[in-house]
Length: 88
Image (cartoon, rainbow, N blue to C red; front, side, top):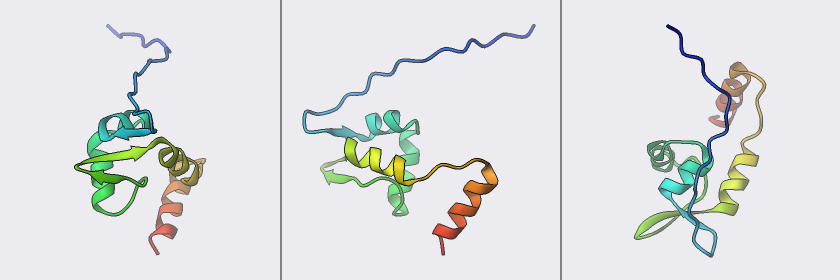
C-alpha cells in the first residue's frame, strides 16, 4: 500500500544568542544542512564565516550573506559548472 505524503511546512525552533550568534547545530538547522556538513565545509575552508570561542559559532548575518552569495542555479549541471569555475 502506497502512503501519500502531504505538503506541509515544518516549523523549526532555532535558538540564537542576543548578539546574533548561532551554535553549529542551530546554524545547520537555519541553513537546512546537517551539522556534519558544516563541519566538513569548515575543514576544507568553505562555507559561511565562523568564529571559534571554545565552541564554533556563526553570526546570522554571515549565514544570510553566504546563502545570498552562493547564487541560484537552474539545474544540477549549472551548479556543477559554477562549482568547477570556483575551484580554478
